[in-house]
Length: 259
Figure (tube, helix red, strand yellow):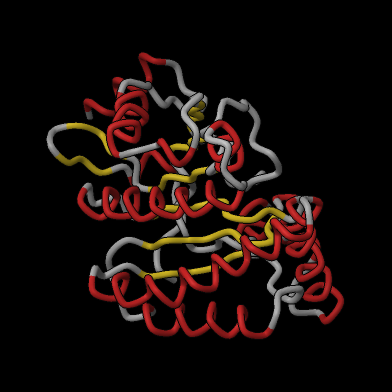
């Protein structure tokens, strides 16, 4: 297990004197609109967005953020035009092959979550190879959600638990929140401290439904290709100013922190 599971507030770290989230989760929205506003094909926005991914990953490494989870392709994205989906998956494949060496050099460990079964064999093989090559790394854990949906995640966990109960490996009376958590895609990873969605929409769109229960939410109108390190700093500053009580009163929290 890479991390012991714990509430997000317990794993926040400090750099440069400020509170920094240990785990940031991002919905990278606005690539298509960015391209359309420039009278470019939508895939040009995805190419520009891939450069933003590189910038934010490097920023997370510098700030000692432990985990970055990116929602790259949802289970609902298959409804988009077939050509756009095909080009997007081709871009993902080429990016994997191009970036894996830099990830290795910078100590980044890569992990994918979501249902891989529908992807072409070449993409599945590249995903597995990238995970194997970066497995020894101990720096930033970069999690890419592909063909992922929060409801799918909970459903697949329930199926696995049901099989364990049926086989006698697990008693139904012993099922609790931790049991469910242990069977989800982010098992063993601290819950996100900060959720960011770019592009102006204010919803979580079936992303990490279970894991975002106590996460601080941050929405911005900035389109993903324009979400540079300065915009990321603004989101981190918003997080640092928030009081995370987890059901306690403000006075109780101050007593705990002062103890």
